[in-house]
Image (cartoon, rainbow, N blue to C red; front, top):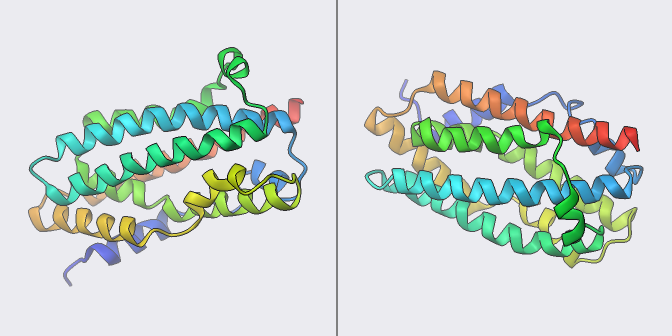
Length: 223
């Protein structure tokens, strides 16, 4: 049976789906119980993640010059990070994550393992494998963002613009899904996609994301 990109994306996402209870911070935010300092730390950590990921995606697009579908996928991701960075400013202002706080903030180690690994993949991973690995996490990340956006409105009283960062990722992007399928299909058609490696990359990405949220949960628990 010939593998298709759609099938491979769906099966990989299903295999790599995290334990629904893995994110221990999410339920706290969902019921309005997370501390304000934790929400500010989330903003500061995302600011650093976005800056790193955007550079990583731009590098992957550059490495994919002879693979137009992969290049288009990573270019769109980089553009999305630029939009997310702009929207993050309103959230950061609402939760008090100002420039002074940013300068003094020291990242928990596990909050920066995810972007560090994305940067490693940008240097070492086959672009089609990386596209498949990253795409496997889109649904999970979108669910987290939708839950947080709702909680910020209903429990923390945040205005619409302050929720815009999470709204941006909460809704599925048909264009991004189409480009992901094209990038993975290009890898299949050219024999450049290694499913074993892509699965390994995706498993590690999911694990590092869990560590990101767990570090913030520990920060909240310490008060």
